[in-house]
Image 1 (tube, helix red, strand yellow):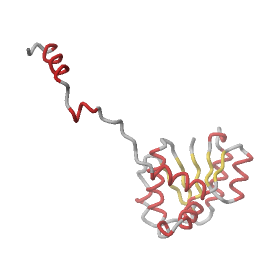
Image 2: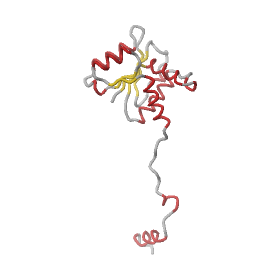
Image 3: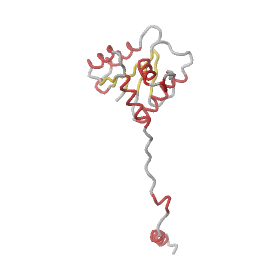
Image 4: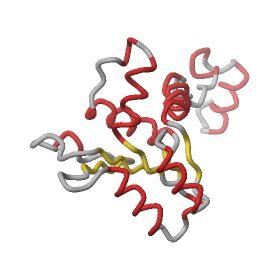
Length: 159
């Protein structure tokens, strides 16, 4: 499911969630969100109000995340509502915002909406889980038994 995220709304929720995140900025949040969407193997579009920094290089090159600033004449809400209304499969969308106007626009098109606080807690839980790797076989560390070694020696004609 593609996600549409109200950037400053989510950032405000993150900063308010604990002292640990009080200093988070847009660039760090985007990096964290890219990691989250990479782990869940999904994509997101984050829209921030305003023109953003003059050097936007920190916001490019994410594999699972597109970042846009609304510019001086539009609000992020307007862009998100346009995206919701123009999507050909809005039921697949997840809109992340605590803004009533955006949540109403999502519900009118039957898109899923998540409050920013709820989404952040869900994302944080996923990010705090260690990435599982396939467990290595015990033989790698213990070695083969004498019988297994004899079998392989016989198979390769070494005994």
